Image (tube, rainbow, N blue to C red; front, side, top):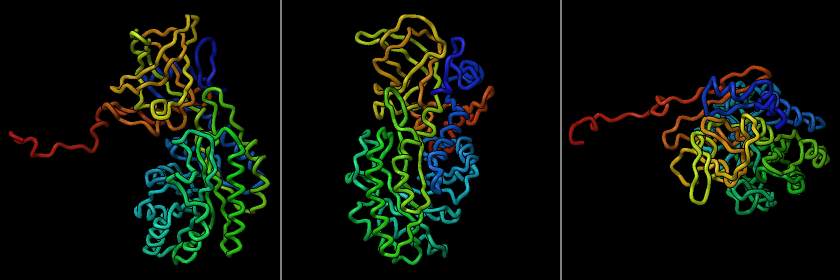
Length: 422
């Protein structure tokens, strides 16, 4: 995380001290580096410059419209999985012809909105979904551009919860059934087959599973074209990992070097769906120590951010490095860093050696630019944090901290409950 470095004993994001942001906006908050986000998408663009391509950022990783706008300014598009993400991408000014709609549970209402917007294509995951899309397109009198998500049954060797390309996965169509599903698509009057899609999982730290999967899809493209199906877009998915702890994932160029021969041979427009690898190490969660506590078996650092703000440690037992905002030479102590949520699973780190912390001091939870705010909630009636975008020596609040009034938005007490006895 080269854009988060200590300067004179203070942790900075680019040219701004995180403690200065905390003083102005309070805690907790997410801070994202404009420089890191820009550098990452440019690394992908350069790596795949030898083939026509689209970098469609996975909105589920970080859905803030300022982040989406930044990628849009770099000629990027968006991989969306809901009507809400469609709405966000359009609000950020993303060209509809750079939007790809994935996900196993698209409703007809979502399909209709995407058809009306004129998106590039739908990634279809079942025959029932295909038929529903045909009906939605028929109602509008348009053709729906589709790719089928083909499940290559390749083990990505990642966490089971973020592995998506195996036979037991809810995602995609088994590769053995793909040809018959494409034949169904070709028979439907308001479906236009334009591509093929696969995605084997997230936080991939090796190239080989990716290459193995794409070789199978390359062979499938040849079979489909032999049946006069016009496969012109190849969505190769995303999933490239980042360094949270000691991982050493490949860089975009290393991945590109391994798969470019296959991609060139296809003659397709290549679509990539990076999410974590674009945004993960471009952000941190800054939190303040409320108390320290000595238990019988453990020592705790209690902070003002919890599992409702960053659920990955509780959900996946995921590792996030934690750094003091101000460096000091106090002795280290093994602690659990926990939040204020009334759940035993509310922790940001367990059995972690940190310099002895004191009430009021700040910590940065690293690698929090992806799957962090987007997975946050209002559990325990806690307003969600602010989001900040740092650009060189200045910063902007790109999402205001939620207020208590925000917690009640949309709720009402029916009149009958204001009547005595009810």
